[in-house]
Image (cartoon, rainbow over all chains, first blue to last red; front, side, top):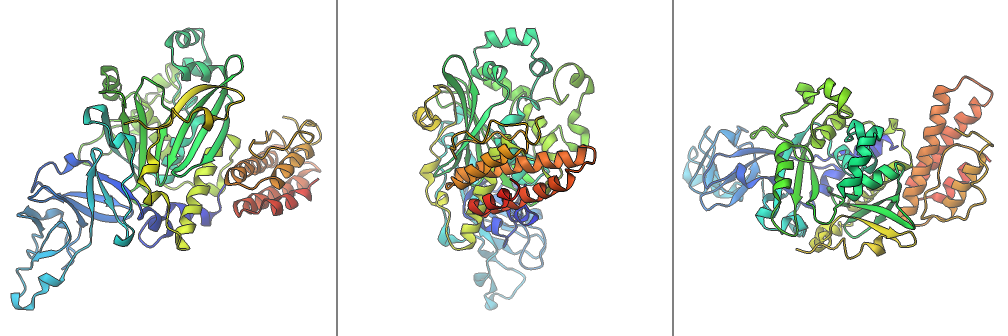
Length: 428
Length: 107
C-alpha cells in the first residue's frame, strides 16, 4: 500500500514534478533510428515525460529533438519542411537546427537580428545500442550512457521493439518485476492445472524454469539493493539440498531484465514515461553469444513471448484496449488463462485494466509483492534524495549497468548473490 | 486459515531480519514475530521485508472485516487493521522501532 501522496510523487513525471526531475537525470530511449531513417526525412512526433517534441534528422544525419511547437505562434513544426540543416515552420518560415538555434526568420526585418538571439527547446540525442536516446535534464548534470549489455552487442545479436501502453510507467515496471504472475497470467491451462501431459512435456523440455515452477508454486522472495538498483531473487525448492533461483534486475530509473537461462536469448525492458497516463514500452531480446537463432526469430515473429506487433506509425499494438486485445473466449476455455495471444499482450491487457494510474492506497499486498515494494521504496528514496539536492549515483556511473540476469541451481547454504556472481556479469 | 491464538509456532523462532516472516494470520504469535523482526531491522532490505509483512497483516485483517460475520472481535480487529497501517507508514518512514511500539499495543 502507498499513501495517495506517495503514489502521486512516484507517478507524476511532468516538468517540475519531483519524479519528472528524477527521470530528467538519465538518458532515456526516445525513438528508433528507423523512425527518422534518412537525412532531411520527415519529422516525427515524440512525447516524453509530458513534453511534446519533434524528432528530425538533418542534412548531416544528426538527430534533433526539439519542442514540437514553433516559439513564434506555437504552430506545430510537425507540418514543417526538413531542409538544408534545419526544420522550417511552414506558417511564417522560421527555421531551427538540431540544437534549437533559429537559423532563419524571414518574416522579420534582418536588421532586428531576432534570429540570432532566439532558440527553441532542444535536447541532446545519441544513437547508441540500436536506439536514439535523449537527455531532458539540465546540461550541467548530463549523465553517462548506461553500459547495458544489449546496447553493446552486434545488431544481428539483438532485436528491439517499441510499443505504446495506456498506463503510467510504474505499473508497467511493477509487472516486469512481479515474478509471481507468470504462473497464472502467462500459463497454459495445462500448466495451470498440472495435467499429466504437461508434466510429461516439462520432463522432456530441459528448461529449468518449467520444471521447478511445477515443483514449487510458492516461491520465496529476496531483494538486495545494488549500485544499479535492485536484484530480485526468487527461490524455489529443487531436488536434494538445492534451490532454484531466478534473478531479475531492476536498473534505475526504469530498466528490467527477465531471468536468463544459459544458451537462450536474454530479454529485458525499459519503461519510459510518455506522460502520467501512458508510457513507451521498449522490449529488447539479445543473445550475448552470437546471432539470434532461427527459433528466437520465430518466437519474435509469432509474438508468443515479449514482443507484440504494432502499428508502425503510432506504435499502438495490433492487440489493444479498443479491440479487447483480440480476446478469444474459446481459447481461454480450452488453451490458456487469458484467451489473449502472447505474453506482451497479456501483460498489456491486465496492466491497462487497472486504469491509467492504479490507486495504490486500495491495494491488498502480501509478501509475494516484496519486489514491488522494494522498487517503489527505492524510487521514492531516489526521488526524495534528488529533491534534497543529492544527485543519483547511477546516472553518473554508466558502468554499473554491466550486469545480466540469471537462473541457476545453488546449494541451500549458498547466498544467491555469492553463488551467482560470475553468471550475473555481462560479458560483451 | 488459523486465527488468533491458534498459530503457536512463530514467537519462539530465531529472529533473522533478512528473512520474511510468514504472515498467515494475525495471531499474537505472528505479531510477536513481526515485532521482534522490526526491532532487529536496520537496512533497506530489512525495511522492505517488514513493510511486506505489515501489508500482509493489513490485508488479512481487511479481509476478515469485509468477509466474516459481525462478532465481538470486530472492534479489536478494526484497531489492529488501523494499527498495521500506522506501523506500515512508520516503517516507510524508516522508523521500525516506533512501528514495533504500535504493534505491541495489540499483544
